[in-house]
Image: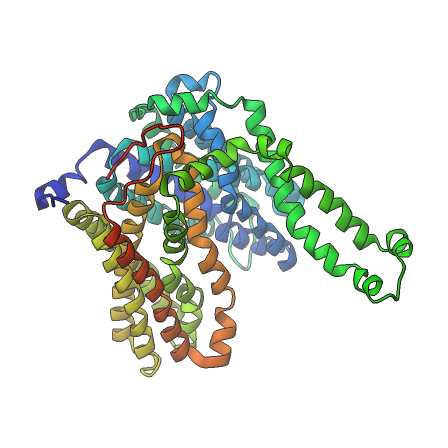
Length: 515
């Protein structure tokens, strides 16, 4: 692979697409934080119970399952707005809904109209997740693979700045408008959310002014295969399948079927008296219907992008998915306990906020920008490997900090290296995911791959507190560093396979290459 010059690398940041991604990233970061951390502060200040606030956090499921309706953005053209183009029309719709939803939330007082406030927050979350899908698809289609890291770094810069504004900035605005921890004022929070509704205007303007990516002929043919009704049916069947499969096992476990197998209960008695067993039968029937030939046909709009990925990479697909699932393990699992560790070490909240949040943000953005330059200069895989090594190795700095107490200088060094490596690794990883997706299913495949990226780290991260309690911070940080080793081996394996050329699908269609 021929390397480009540093001038070419810097030129990757001097395109209109880079500015567009910066402003779209700003629009994406606002609603995400406003329906999570900031909303929880508003609800608590209004005197809402902690249990209710906990339930309200389930709004975040919209982001976890956004891949379910991503095929709509690939395969269905919006009426009227569709004249703007496939990507810009969905972006405009989602951004308008976010702005209207935030403005609606501004009119609600959780003390008097909590259901309406939560309903509007759900609307904002779904519209925001849809915006994320559309932005990722736009980024994938607007530039080739080596420029994806620069675009991702620009997007990350806008996203992180707006996320900081929507958290710390929102709390400042609410306080400035007159609502404090000792004196709750609903109008102050309403004014704050109205300000952020207006801050969606730069993103809306960008969507109207930026150019629409060209639609490949294969994508147009793929979009014509499924009607809107078929696509909506596939989403419905997928939701039923995702609910019925785990429910089938949980209801079977809760039933008394073991007593029947032991001869202590009859089958008639089981069916007549055991409601858990009856629910098991119901969920089993639903699962069977979804997996039948008719059910699989109805799932075609969702399954087609998945089968396309498997057909292109064949046996290598499993190893690629393994790399994707493990790449962010080291820093994500550590990140769950990072703030707890800072407090246990004796750092003040002011030190944590200034060093970890503000200074850490700057280092993350510098790392992402530098990663974009390196990828244009040297290619994706070498920088992906360096990012993986750095993400795992910087965890050892936390190990060193455990024996140094509240050493502010070491905290600055640790967070500087950790956040810089995280930004570099993120930009490399986004470019890598982008290189794996097909332009025929850019929205759906990227949404799926990015969801796989977070699944395993989130699951293991849920046990991070147990690991710290049982083994202490030192062994925990060493463990998180070792979690990066499998990823490095998989990257080395893929580097031996380069160039990784996806195999064509069975119908003989050529796959558009971006690397």
